[in-house]
Length: 137
Image (cartoon, rainbow, N blue to C red; front, side):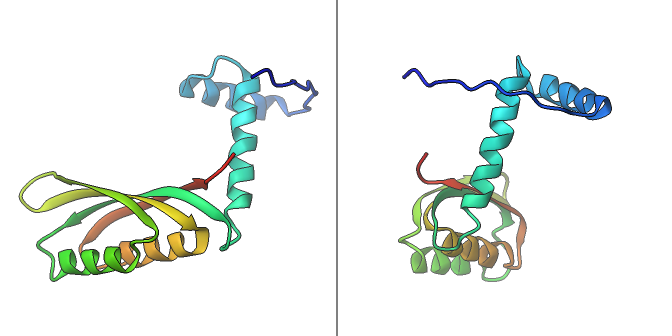
């Protein structure tokens, strides 16, 4: 697919440009244009997923101690309550106590965020992070 490219100029302070160049080099960009496009895309996605009724996809990654209280049952109950938003889960045993679980989510942004907040707040969840994006581009 051939997309038309529009060229435009950007005015930027030298110190900020130097920091940007250092950052994009570290991240592996070969040019400023692609880095700027990614920054713009990310900003648009962030704006589009503010609306709780917007459609989104995402992942919730969590690390937890499955020996903490009734955590495993609470997680299963929440996952069954939200079966419409959960496409799949992956569960990995890190050691005898610690598990890594990833939920792949799809649905309304507000419901996905509320589910993630409920899960991350459970006692025994050591770390949880939701990554959310638009469901269509």
